[in-house]
Image (tube, rainbow, N blue to C red; front, side):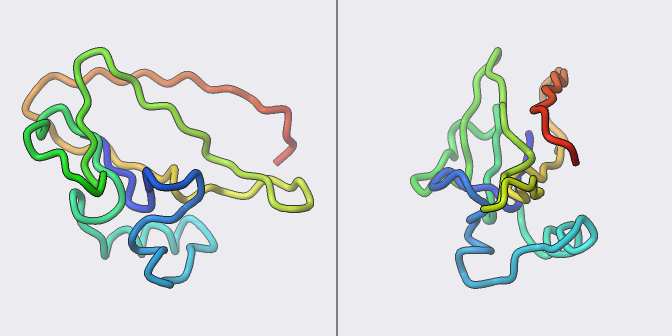
Length: 114
């Protein structure tokens, strides 16, 4: 399972139920980790799971995945000036699973200077 505590299937921006409820957006990694610690996988953000296919829900807080599926996301957005900003909706955690989980990273450099 992979959990995106600030993720949302409703928008491309960081608009999880936590942030939609007028909670402040994290300003840095430390704040993001602290805020995420107050949230619950399967109730907040988006949980991607092969183990919980039978409990995928209507409001898309749990997404069913099948063998061979991939998760792709961007971790930076551009503000109005074009300066990259962290996209907190991409913050994620790998959670234990009942099955075998294979993980691979493929990094792309977008040409932005951070």
